[in-house]
Picture 1 (cartoon, rainbow, N blue to C red):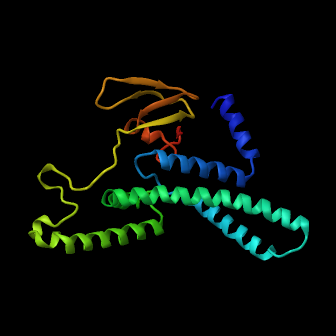
Picture 2 (picture 1 turned 60 degrees about the vertical axis):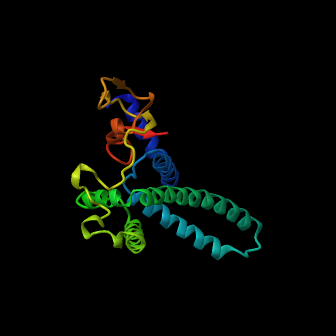
Picture 3 (picture 1 turned 120 degrees about the vertical axis):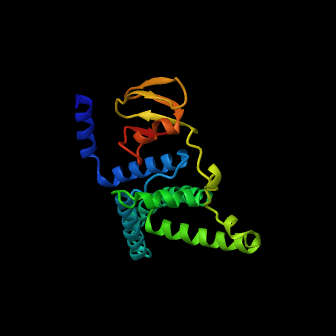
Length: 225
């Protein structure tokens, strides 16, 4: 660990938890909107943020109607901060739900595989949404046209014949990343390209080449921008 890492740790410890959560939530929001794949659900962060939003809403409701000018000014500040958190949470969830709508079967298989890990891919509510959405979609397809096909051709997750019916996101999509810690040489699969990623660098690179280092998926050595 070098002096920059030590200074960074001291700086983080001196920042209030509320501000750190806001910064982390903003990073998760940007990463989710940029990454072609859905990222693991940040359960601890979202538990803190949602609990703080609930407490702030209760505070605003309790103090609304107080004629004290100082209280009213404080409420304006609280409501402004509250709206900022609510906007980030709503936009973050919309980005995730949009990916669930686009690739439900693929995401369901990834979530099932992540249940043995410390960080599940989806929250409980998101998984309920996925299963309900997929059930309604399958019933609609069956009623509309799949019911007229032979039973062997009615599956939506068929992978026989070397062709998968499961839609997947484009892992070779280009993303902008900022390097937070030195990583070293990175090879782009399928090409002869190699590049050295050093702290502070900004790169445009295929998602498949760097996703295991990105915040929310692996070590957090990179952040999406």
